[in-house]
Length: 169
Image (tube, helix red, strand yellow):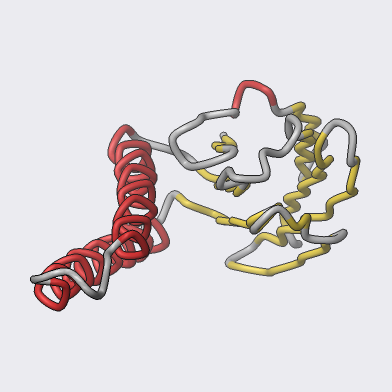
């Protein structure tokens, strides 16, 4: 019993219930249209196909919170005044925190990828710095499955994604 877990615009917002699913004998098709994109938002679509336990979902939520923390740390680094006293000390402090959080995020991603019940994982920033990434197509094979992802740009309403998972054989 294959499930899909999807998040948008970050990994905190679960949009799994908004995905349209079509199932044939050995194929699954998932469709999702993003809401309008926010120029200053994360705008990352993440799709994970497999069987999910509470631990995997908790890891995804933790990763999203850590990514939001990274954004805030980067903003604090940018706001530092190099002419003020303790600038180097504060900069080193924020950079050390940033590095530690990046290492924890990488560890979480490795843990999710090693989970034997995760069949496929796809994550793509749709808009970065107010610029929409163009149409996109992705295909990957793993175990006995093939994952394909394609997107169409719909500037007024968001992006339409079609995700296919098929069992090879």
